[in-house]
Each structure stands twice: as structure tokens, then as C-alpha cells.
Length: 305
Length: 214
Image 1 (cartoon, rainbow over the protein chains, first blue to last red):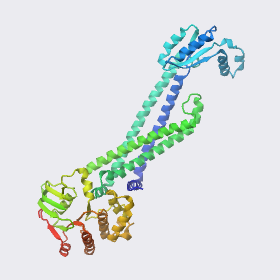
Image 2: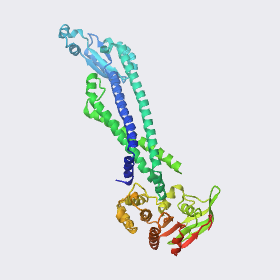
Image 3: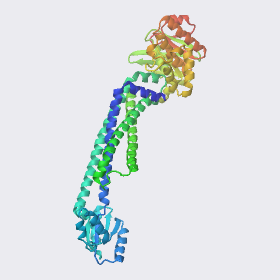
């Protein structure tokens, strides 16, 4: 163990309450940061889910020929404003209907495939373009009607859902940034105060070290290291607490939201997401501790002179 | 090795040094004597670059240290071993760790520490106290820790500021013996003291200061 690490650990042991308060504030900051990061991820995912669903359904006329359908499908597929083009024949439309009414099989028996028109389903890359695209598709000869995700209740309600989600996502992000920002600033100040107190309590030692030829870097190393230890412990505790909480609630959330992928269903992706958050937090924590400690050390050494 | 050239220093209206000039050669043992406030400590602090003179020059190994940059001051101090009247040992470190700190400061490889610390503690007769804390030592032992820390980096020059000031006669004599021994090994020693008994018992040169003048 290097002399600086040893000094830093001894300093932590000597003033355990200062150390605990610094670690506690940092842990709180990183707990909230992890939680907010996951909430922002979930809101983005649900927004993206609704934005990328088959949003437009072009119902085809009964007399539409295979050639005409293929031509229109190809035309839509190469349009850069459009994605995920899918042809749904009458039989598949009936199957979808049957699945939707499986709790009441009599309803399915009453209908024949001919009732359901074949359709072309597709999404748009940007919802702002939807209206223009609908107009263009509607003018096609083989198209009978154009619907806007009927299962969500029509054109307006999908727009409403997306707009509402966008608003929620925006406020979540803004609120999260402000809250985490305030906590990060508090952590920074707590670190600054604790490191300054440490410098004051080590005044005599710093004076001796300076007289025997210690460079400012030598004097400040254990103090900066101490700040970094606080940050690493703060991140570890905050992140682990949030991770355990999310592990606990994830099954219920995934089941409640069903096919809306608010959280990754694959364990690998799930852990990768948390690993990325941990990596980012370690980096932020390290920077926070480094800057905080250096500012405190610089101020104290300046005062000592 | 050390040369003061027309050095003056005042603290407000108090004149600490007035046009002081003297020279100390390599391997010499010199006493700086005089009553309290005569300017002895000011001279030592100028050699350490704690103070800058108002006028004049201070040379260390022919280099004018009043001109060196602030960032190079630690390098200058690493060449000097210093012993203080109040020992200035680190209270939360053991005897051995106190000595190791000086090696860490000068960037000596950690692998060499044990050998060098053992050697120097043997020299000051503190081998058996290596793992004790300063609070468990007597005044004389503390001064020997301070001396061991100064010696371990193998400095060219040792500054001793009243190293016997807080010690009884016998212990002071012991410290003097050690300093004599170190001087015989070729180190230059400048010792500030007002202990006339020690000066009389020694054959070394004295630079006597009175009200900032030699």
C-alpha cells in the first residue's frame, strides 16, 4: 500500500463521522441518479414503442390485384419517410380478429375472411409527416380507406398518447436533471467542506512536510485520494441500492406494461444497462471528487501561504 | 557551500538582519549564536527559502536561491536536512514511518526504505524504538527521530535550529555527539543555538549575531 493510500485511510479512520456524511450524501446523489436514469430510459423506450408501432393502415379494395399490391408495397418500402411496411392478407386479418376475440369464440364464428379487407401496415419515421403520407396513400387507386392505428382509437388519440408521453418524458428528464444537479452540487460542497476541514486538521503535518521538501502534489495526494475513496464508495452504495430496488420491482413492472418494453427483458441487456450507468457514475464521481478535493486543497494551501 | 551577501530583512519596523555577509564551506560545522531575536532563525529560514531577503543574495552551492522559482523550492529543501527545537515529528506516525516520510518526499524507491531507515535509526540509537509513536518517546528520543529524518535522505547540509533547546544537559550533549559524528562523515552543519556551554565545549567556528548584525 502506498504511503498516500495509507495516509488517506488513516484520515478516514480518524474522523469516521465526516467520512460517513460525505459517503452518505454521495450515495444519495448516485441512488437518485441511477433511479432517474432508469426512469428516463423507460420513458424513452415507451415513447419509442408508440412512435414505431404500425401507425398507418391502408385498407385495400376487394378488387386489388397482387401486382398492384406488390407495386404499392415496394413504393412504400423505398420511401425514406416510411418504415416497417407489412402486407396483411384477409386470412391474417381474420386471425388477428380471432385472437382479439378469443374470450368470445362465437363472435369469430359469425364472420368470414371476406369481411376483413387486406391491408398494408406501416410506420412513419416522424409523426409530423403522417398527415401528408396519409393523403398520398389515400389517393392510390387500390386503397379504399386509410386508418390511423385503429386499436388505439384513431388518428387523434395516438397523437395524444405520443404528445402526452413526450411531455412526461420531457418533464421527467428536466426534473431529473435539476434534482440530480442539486444533489451533485450539494455533494460537491460537502466534499469541499470536509476536505477543507481535513486540510485544517493536517495543518501541522503539511507545514512539516513542506519544510522537508514535499511538493504540493505530495501534500495533496492523500487528500485527493480520500475524496476519490468517498466518491467510489458513494457510487457503489447509491448504485447498488437502486439496482436492488429495480431488480425487485422489474418483474411486476414488465408484467404490468406487457408488450411496452419499458425495461429490457433480456438479462444481458438489463445488466448491460446498469453497467453503463455504473461506469458513467464512477466517471462522474471521480471527476466530482477530483475537482472538489483539488479546489479545497488549493484554497487551503493558498490560505496557509 | 552557503554564502550570504549583504543580506537585509525587516518585518515591518523590526530589523531581523542588517547587511549580513558570511560564508560557510563544505563540511564545516558552524554555530549561529546570539540572544533570542538576534536573527539566527531568520538566517536558517532564508536558506530554506521560507523567507526572501529584502536586499542581498543567498547562495547555496553557488546558486542564488533568492532567484529560484517557487516550484523549485521543494527540490532545494530536499537537499537540506533540518532539525527543529520543537522536533516537529508527525504525531500519528511511528518512529520508522516518520523517517520513511522523508524518503517518500524525496522520491526514494520504496524497496530501499527499510535498509536506509534501519541504518539511520541504528546511527541515532533508536532501532528498538522503531515501532513506537512519538507520544511514547522522551524529548531526547524525539530529537533523535528528527535527526534521523534529516539524515536519511543523505543531505549535503544539515540545519539545526536550537536542537538542544528543549533538552537537559546530558541529552543535549548526546545530540551534540551525534552531530559531531555526522559532521565527521562530511556533512555541513549549521546550528543555531544560544547554549553557551555547548559552544564553549566545541572547537567549531561561531557566527555571532546581535540585533541582526554579525
